[in-house]
Length: 145
Image (cartoon, rainbow, N blue to C red; front, side, top):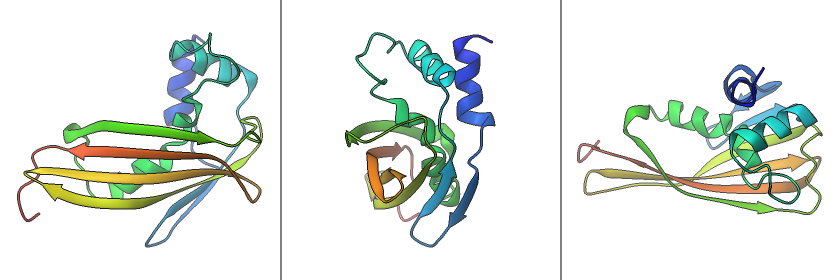
């Protein structure tokens, strides 16, 4: 299986071990990544020459973010990705099981564009190992919707 196929499987066919949703968050448990999966991600994202783990490796855990977008009934064909930031702790070990939670930070409209900002935390035990901040823009929002 080539690197791109492994990456596709990781992102779409590898659901979380468990998940739960509340009014304010989406939380799931995710198995750790194998060395093969990490190397496939490195190759598919052209980050195989980065020191240590690939800087965007937590992208694999965006299931909770996309679950929020589904809950908000966002038309994915109108979605643009704008900002993404990863804040790492020194303790993150992608091979260990972790809990991922995503919450909406803001949801506002301006001139037919909807801006949705989310915060995703990747925890190992009680420690926040990675915090991901992401902003999406949804085009062509009807005023007042």
